[in-house]
Image (cartoon, rainbow, N blue to C red; front, side, top):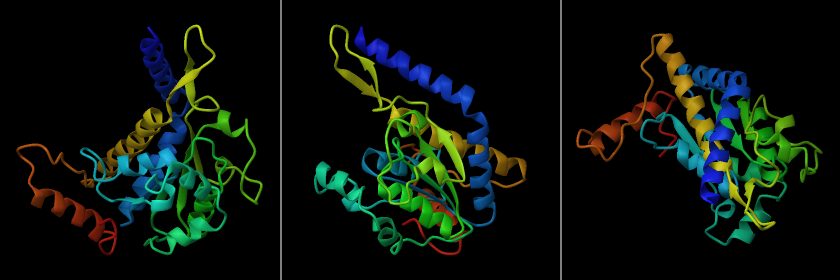
Length: 248
């Protein structure tokens, strides 16, 4: 059945990620652990569907507490998908977004873009690096190599970031062709991207434990043993340790 082919492709993509990107994930986790150990936070940014990974990393059961999702209404779908698509190609917009964010050199950042070609994620990486942050790109090199950049620098996202995690996904994201048809379906960038984000966070937390720290991790809000006070306390600790409340 077609759905079984898709699920098999998802398993294959995750297996490839594990076998080929271990060094990059470990390097990214090291940068995140260093930021958290120094009192920083992890910023996560993406446009279009990639913004889902910024939300996935934030306030997540079993996830790091000191995470700031950089979310912008124009880059999401509130005002329509075509408006979002136009906005992510707009040069100069990343700097305007960062005017409303508390970003410090002690922090680390993940920038997600499957294609790595649009102006805003590329500029976001440039702006964050200019502020002294280690920038981790989550992107598909196969897609990036199949297209041209939309940024005036002539660079793609993977050419700018300090650390690159290659999702290994095909150009266009859709992973399967429907039997008897030329139609391609089955995007995998969210599935694999979420695994990448959590893998980095888990490894970063493990490294903090090895160094004698107790990493701040959020419990599920839907367990009988978790109260709102528990969640608020963990969030406050995760952000107050960075200097002041920065993640809401």
